[in-house]
Image (cartoon, rainbow, N blue to C red; front, side, top):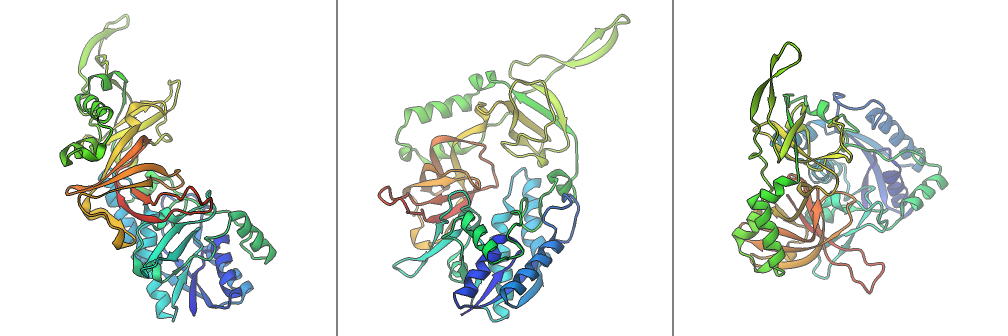
Length: 433
């Protein structure tokens, strides 16, 4: 069997190539360049020229052919343009998930197939397994600290059938040790960070390639607002009084999933005289529900749960973004990790955005499923109930979740078998929040 390894220059894909070679596969490596621009990237992080150089050295060391492919046009069109569009709408996309679906296991796979490859292998920490009906399961990797199945949550059966994950059953420490033992040039190379194939970026600067910077207000929301918000009080009361959430109607679920709207916090100005000369000045009247505490460079540059980049002091606890209003170019923040605006229990995924890795497991309208869900990479899996309704798939968490962000992917996993300590949950599917 002929296998193309997506060789990135990192230790994970290098060991994947080494293992396949040792197992007797007909292996060749291909390095893909997906990005040329340096605007907004931080110098020295994930520079493709250095990665390509290391990848070539690895291929030579292992003794496999090496090819280069430029997919930057496809990457810009199918990943980066989508990313810009989502940020412009006030949503936070996950380009790494899109990169795997649209590039590594689509455009790259096509190039590999054209060179005669039967399969494509990557250095992802995840596993696949064939189900009794012949379909392919996608499972978590063995290493709980490195599992990367979340990034593959949009793959379909055709893509999985062509994929190999040679290191999914290994710990990261074992991968490092094997690379060192084989004296691979990438053995001590640090893991890449930032946006897939772009690298670590100054996000506002990167986004300003297409999104205009416009100053707006930063509004701190006080706890008193929640005591007067009809929606917050109604949502809280409904969830407290209804232990069986699956009994709720479609409209009730949709209302529970709708984010809070802070636009009713308005500020009125007043004039006053200041100093010995009684100079006339203008200020905002005190508001018990909130206060304008600073300025920002564009609401589209911020995301729910964000802490860094606000540059506003004078608080005992850190400030977090709890909402953005793109139309008004305003961001809302709250003080402390327990601020009420950071937490949500019910999320909605539009019906057309729900993706099942094994279509046979798709929930029918009216169906429900106990599972575990994560809404960001490396988040611990959270107990939840999936409810499929006419107006979408609702994710009802047992406990409220912090920083749920529109545009991100919620990935749902089967429950773990408590009798099997080595059981790795199957990734069932995903959808855009």
